[in-house]
Image (cartoon, rainbow, N blue to C red; front, side, top):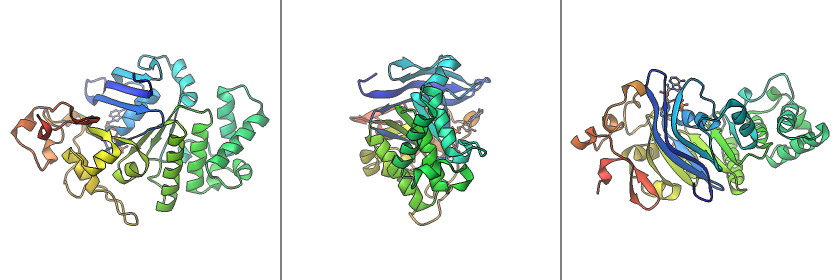
Amino acid sequence: MGADALLKLHHLHLELPDGTALLEDVSLTVRRGDALGVVGESGSGKSLTAMSVMGLLPGLKASGSIGFEARELLGMKDREWRRLRGAGMAMIFQDPMTAFLPVRSIGAQIDEQIRLHERVSRREARARTVALLGRMGVPDPEAAAKRYPHQLSGGLRQRAMIAMALSCGPALLIADEPTTALDVTVQAQILTLLCEIRDSGAGVMLITHDMGVVAQTCTHVAVVYSGLVVEQGPVAAVMARPLHPYTQALLEAIPPLDGPRPDALPSIPGRPPAPDARPEGCVFAPRCRFVRPDCAVRPALREPEEGRRVACVLYDA
Ligand SMILES: Nc1ncnc2c1ncn2[C@@H]1O[C@H](COP(=O)(O)OP(=O)(O)OP(=O)(O)O)[C@@H](O)[C@H]1O
């Protein structure tokens, strides 16, 4: 693992007990101070990738490697995962109501999270909770800490969830569609907050179906399709010249700032295949406008340019 690599998935393979592959050969890296966008349509395997890193996939068989800091996470015991979650890595979701119990104040829940990992007094935990909420841009954080989740707006609840995720100073923050349910203005504020967290030295993995969100927040991007990484590289380079036809389609589908979000890719009809119906060759071939006979063989990830990878025969040497 490179000196500054925080998280390194190497040939991660995930399958159901019946042998159906859900993720195939996923390799990606998150460095400290970087934000990696994992982008793809619904069903492409984004959440599975995140959940594998968090150790939250009971019943699925994983192989390959998940390196975090200097450790191998695959094969770790539940007790070790529990210790790592919160203090080493934390995750936020689209719907903050799933992260908070409805019957207790958000402050009490963040205090408890802090005290679960560190020996601090109640008073000290609350002081940290209030400071964190303030840092997350929650106005009057002392009063907000006493509120129940349903008493806060969607945007404030999202900030409170991020505060809870950051309460133990995790090195890695995983955000799964954190702004999908929010209106455009609040979405922009939350993305700015994620950029600040990234710039403070944490590693961020941002899961989204929206390339526009990646452009605003991420330094690197991995494009996933039907359980495989089809392209990855620095965001600026990928946005300027997307190589894979699927990445090109995702870029064409960036929703207008004030318009409705399309739920399908306008430039390519159809949907990604289900894991048990993946074609043998290139998984994207059935929807690809450049399909040709040699797409019948699964293309390997190539490195046509320094730091960029793409799995497509168009880039065969
Ligand atoms: N526990 C499971 N058992 C069987 N299939 C699963 C399981 N979890 C996920 N899948 C399948 O794996 C594929 C990838 O799912 P995943 O939730 O990672 O997609 P996603 O890219 O996050 O999509 P979305 O944006 O809709 O959340 C889907 O086809 C899904 O149906």
